[in-house]
Length: 440
Figure 1 (cartoon, rainbow, N blue to C red):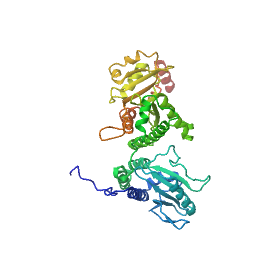
Figure 2 (figure 1 turned 120 degrees about the vertical axis):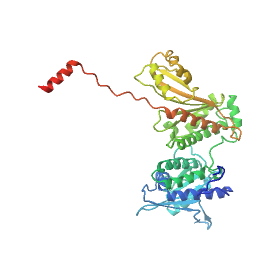
Figure 3 (figure 1 turned 90 degrees about the horizontal axis):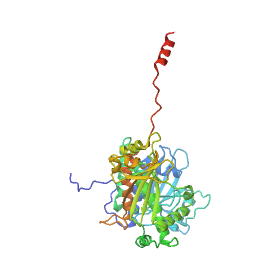
Figure 4 (figure 1 turned 135 degrees about the vertical axis):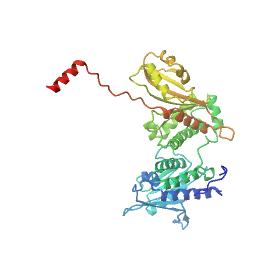
């Protein structure tokens, strides 16, 4: 079979043209799979209020017409109805954007009014825009009344692909037919012609802004600083989604409570970091892993650093703790840096993994006591431009660094588990007494 042959698709991308046509195809593909693959509709729609019942019926429609008060007709991209037993159906209007098209408040507000008039429960928007926080909408100016019976929800295409990839992995053995349908949806969304493109650009002012950062000229009041901060915020959410797709897990960005409740607090922190040090940071949480992934990009040094910090064994001396860590990183690059913090010490002793493989005493001899915690760091060159055929862009280079660290380091690390308490050997007298008591 010729490798250049194109495998047939249940959802074709051939002939996809203008933005409107791509939106129609993407809407139809997604809604059709939602109506068939119940596990996918449960995971996407039940958090929004739809029934979780496996036997619930999911009906989907494209471009349903609605008459407005001015006698004109409005056609949302889609409609989803979830019905179970005698319960009232849960119904949502769907508005879809692909490529670089963005949602507008005017259009979404119109669909909110239609949903309210029809007694529907929700309006769902889908685009390549990434919401600043969970539960927030990327479009400003939406007229959602307090206590409104119509909720507005947003999915990025990346979020949908993330959920779909986990469904595929979960159903591969139990229901191969449905797993295949989900895989076909993913193949469609991941194709460049679908319009469900990835986040690959830091904005039109990126080149100018990065030069201001490099020279230390960027100020907190500069609109460029806020723009980069907001785009970095979206990137961290995007990175969590993309890594989640890669490992089939619900990876999340770690945020302090104040920043979860107010995105402006988070933006202000990123602006301060950027203007004072030229550095942007973030943390990703991978379920059941040894610790958070700490992501740091230094725009002045053009360096990406990915690291994780975790407890050292509590029942080992320094050399034993170091050897325990080195054994877990048998296949990791020797250039990785290991930082060991002695108990009650704020500064680590640092050595490369290659040096520790040769002799653990390189680090142990410098430590004033036993190791309390380790930090493992991988550094790489930071792409500064936009992605092209010849070079990796900023976003692509940071994502590659995250993937490399996770696959070569993070997933290999397992938290230390001390041995169970060992039974003490019995003395000869004790054994005699016990034997005597049995024979008496």
